[in-house]
Image 1 (tube, rainbow over the protein chains, first blue to last red):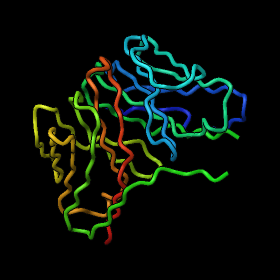
Image 2 (cartoon, rainbow over the protein chains, first blue to last red; image 1 turned 45 degrees about the horizontal axis):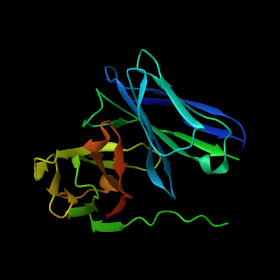
Image 3 (cartoon, chains in turn blue, yellow; image 1 turned 120 degrees about the horizontal axis):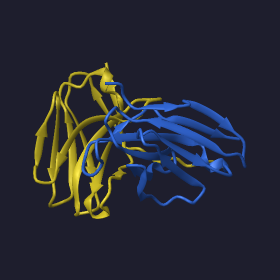
Image 4 (tube, rainbow over the protein chains, first blue to last red; image 1 turned 180 degrees about the horizontal axis):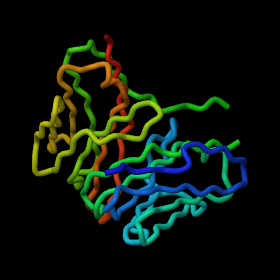
Length: 113
Length: 114
């Protein structure tokens, strides 16, 4: 089975712009979670989607949003980018979510200038 | 200004020796734990998991020990190899949230000396 894929792998944006990142889960996986990884804060949970519904959300401002499509693919969007949004954004998928192993993609590295 | 990164605990071991990486978790309601390995430029890679109804689980060259009394988790790697050099994270799944999100530790950087 193909693993979790994320596009793009690298992205450079400027402050105030918005960005959309994409994640394709492992085939058959219906739960998709997003994480932000920075040197200062480590790995932090953003949100989780299951069956096109946001099921859980971390402590991030409303500028961070996401959605999931009927084929379980997910996108996350960050509006009005700030310098502090520079990070590695990781997507993870699992079969149905709760209490299961999450498998991570390679991440999208976002640099905000 | 200068940014301050997380101070990652580090562990250096000789190739062939055994490694033990420790992790303390905070929530006694956590019922599922996972160890991940992250190499530079890559996403976290699943190594091994354990549920709270167990205290030990073995995989290939790896063993995870869970001590719920002191909320402590450890990962043992036997016969450590240069390819084991990476940052290792423990993660806990907190059932009280009712959904699937993991809380990660800060990680430990393992360096294997050839």
